[in-house]
Length: 254
Image (cartoon, rainbow, N blue to C red):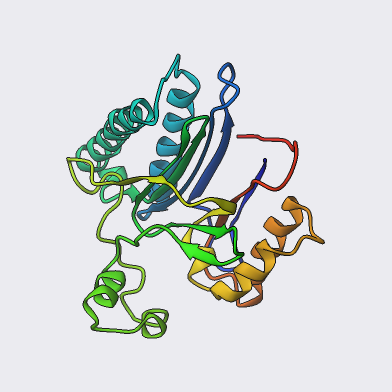
């Protein structure tokens, strides 16, 4: 398994409010975590929220002492995401400098017992299954996604809808954590975690083609996806992590 990721400011924004991390546990060799956050809020507050979320996730992940099942890891996620949400919420509601800040989060924990994934907001996780089909495994917490589910608009209409960036959930918005947390039971070749700077502007068919391009290294596929987002103007920050289960070895970083 090889994991690579990057974060780009894009071609329009003045700052990068996205954050990501890839973490190999320092002692538990079969435990790996990946996380992508997209901060929301003016005056750089969004990047503060995203930084808190990723830094706390990494810190607490490295301090896991033991686990004996996916149930243990689920309990760890719920406990520590609640604490992260509380920290961001309190800052956002008690400090004018950070008023209104929040952050999306998608994350996965890969263990000897299986893979867990979580979603808060409108960042996404895709997999490429063993039949080479690209599958979206998270549901956006957004107004347009809710409208799609209700049949009010089509997926194509959602791409240009004026409220397409309006999220209905993020870390720091609500006092109590709201989270989608699931076990990934479907075998997969590749996993992609990304902010909407990628999935909001690059067609899924193009994402699939790049993920399956075996002439490229995993690192080159990461760069190719960023390039595709920049080809259409790079209007948002672009952050992604690719997990390639077909690759042997490879470096992981934070």
